[in-house]
Length: 570
Ligand code: FAD
Image (cartoon, rainbow, N blue to C red; front, side, top):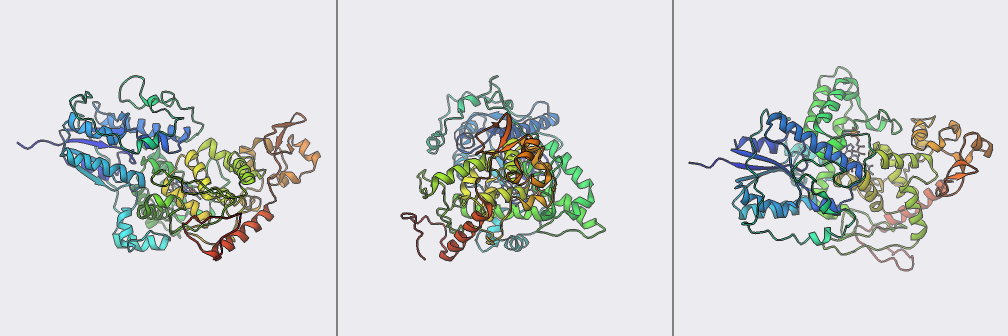
């Protein structure tokens, strides 16, 4: 008699039940038992930068998924297992007599190497592996192939390649039932322990998060709370989970006018409560919303819309194309995509402050540049919202507090840090975004930082965002600044973006003195707000000059030696 399948369904980037091709494939096996599991991966615990807001968002998604599974089958739920998948899964294959392992494809550089390792141990154990893509509109590897085996560096390359790959699949419905999980013996004594992956020694260099703390206090497989993880409380108002994601999408789709005529460049970066774009990015990141569900729900509205609908790339579906473009670029370039060193598509710019980069072997392959002391000070002031430019500071404070900022606000602060103000390496900024964004996605974060720093994807470096004129376009009164930089809340609208220009008497009336570098909190018992850390137009001109020179020299990827501050000749 044929053995009925005993399936582990490994949730990773797909914390949902709706439109999950991988989950559907697992259920199509008509398993005798199916274990829905999540493994804490030391890579994300130790090595990735994850702030409390993203941790909370992840736990929300896990809990919501677990509850939804339990609603379909009260005997089941999401089982959260606290060990690296590379070592844990081989043990489970034997102990649980697993026949199949099923998961959603992940083309992130680290994920690929992890999955290779897991698949190889599955083969050794005679376990069949089923992998389905579902995180993007098209399979990034298929897009790369259709693009002549090259990374997609423009939206038109992505669109042409996508057309060759084929129609974007229609979403599939959520399952109506989930099989029982089998027994879960965890006595691995009789099984051969799998060797520790070599990379673990590198992961353990990040000591501040103790992996031991991640063991649940109740000794079960329940989704932990943030307190149980020993992580400080989140400050974001945004909550994760498939149930919430689908409700937000429903609301957007109900507003046909908004859905069909959405134009990203016309949306206000200064809008908050509510924001002017969908804020679905963290749901797409954790897979609590399927991007194909999103795409087709929008496209159906557009197809039936009586008025003039907007078109890609500015339309809502166009936004998802950008996402696919970055995923396919990363799929082709692997770990090199996320840094300048070794990346043939990324321009080398002799930034004042450059990033230290870990090569794949853990070696430091980058270098620090000269001028770094003053630039480091600028970097710290940018990061902590103390630049003295209220628009920049408000955005950075929103980012730290809430974990999400509008796309054009990301443009402003990224341009300011790199080619439009500080002339600091985009990799330093990307690291801050990595830690604080709740929607942090390596492919999208890297690609957009390269775009904004004009190192790849975009090259119009003479177009800079003014921290004064740009926010004024959509928020003359400065309500956004007043909310996130409350020291300035009583400043007259005339000075809200340039408070240093206000006469001292106006500063006293507004109960805030403009002085210092932001480390001084009060002056004469009044709150203080810093002076601008540099003259913006002077810095912009210096940056444009530097970019012109770097474009003229035209180096990519490499890290040439900067000797005594001199720039290598062409
Ligand atoms: P909407 O405008 O409603 O767009 C719908 C969806 O399309 C988004 O949810 C997102 O998944 C996708 N999308 C929209 N614009 C882009 C874009 N330019 N690139 C890729 N996908 C896009 N997005 C991330 O998802 N993760 C990141 O880590 C990230 N880092 C960024 C860093 C910088 C410097 C910049 C300039 C942009 C970054 N973005 C990132 C892209 C973009 O800013 C966000 O996706 C968007 O602001 C999310 O808000 P939303 O869901 O309301 O977007």
